[in-house]
Every structure is written in C-alpha cells, then in structure tokens.
Picture 1 (cartoon, helix red, strand yellow):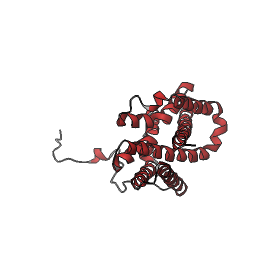
Picture 2 (cartoon, rainbow, N blue to C red):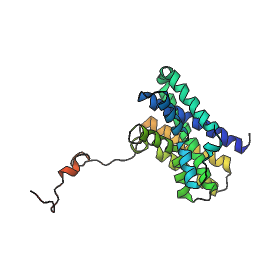
Picture 3 (tube, helix red, strand yellow):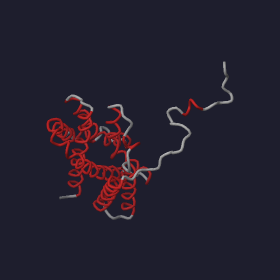
Picture 4 (spheres, helix red, strand yellow):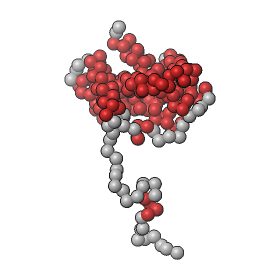
Length: 224
C-alpha cells in the first residue's frame, strides 16, 4: 500500500466512524431517517469541507470524490436500522470516535502543512478537520457544541496536530508524522475518557453565570 492509498483508507475509515456518531445523535433526538442521514453526512465530512474552504480548495475534496458521501450514508443507514442493537455498545463506539478524531487531526494537519502553513495554521487545520463536523452536528440539533463542554477532545486533536508539524519539520516523512499525530491524539483522548480528565472551569462565582448580570449594580444606572 502506497502512502496515498494509506491516507485515503484512513480518511474513509474516519469518515465512516464519525458518520456513525452523527447518526447516533440523530436517533437520540428521535429524528426521521432524513434527519439521521443529514447528521451523519455533516458529522462525517463537515470538518473536511470547512478546512478545504479555508485553504482555498474549491470545490472541497468530498464533492470531487463522492465516495465520502456514500460512506456517510452507509453509516447513517446502519445506525438507523440497527440502533437498538448498536446502542449497548456505545462505549465501544466512543472508542472508535477517538480513533476517528486522531485520524482526522492527522490528515487535516498534514494538509495544512502541505499548503505551507506554520505551526498555528497546521494546528488549526488539524483541529478543525477533527471537530468541525461535530460542531455542525450539535448546532443543527440546537446543542452547545460538545467540544466546548466535554472533556479532553479538541485539545487532544490540537496537541496531536502540533506533533505532526514537529515531525514534518524534523523531516520524518508523512507516514511517520501521521502515525505519531494519530497515536498521540487517540492516546490522549482515551486517557481522558478513562480518567475523566477535563480542562479547568471558572468556579466560585457569586451567582450562576446565567443570573449574574442581573445581580450587578452599576453606578450609572438610573433608578426610576
């Protein structure tokens, strides 16, 4: 298998896994079959579309290689017609989601590097590719994107993407860079899931953030 074949195989696998997680979200919200398929497609290829648009790749790769859409539809249909059988294995699906996260972070970061971006750009492309589809999915079902509230998810993708830039800068080759990035991202995500590691949050506020503004007394506020 050549390097190009490896990249395509990894990309298709990551797309399929993310499509399954998107379809599961649709089933949880009791959407019809069209809604489930829409979520599976946007979750599977949304991040890649955003990345390509920023890089100026027009039309995005998924529109010139429609097999990606077919893979998303296959994942959505699989979940829709066998959700009751797959649901008990949701923890295993989350493990595959971590694998998809690592693959997309690696592929997105590599594409950013190949387009001449610096370390910040590479990290942004890797992270966006990995989490962009999930953000679109959550917005479609009117939820706060999981990457802003869940545990070590986008951070794992960002650190993995940064490792890819370091490997490429050290001239280790594409295959080694992909493996290091994907392995680091997957490892960080699985450790965070197991140990329930999350990022720091603001604590000890005088009131819940939702009502705090109403409790502030501004000196310039006129009272009637």
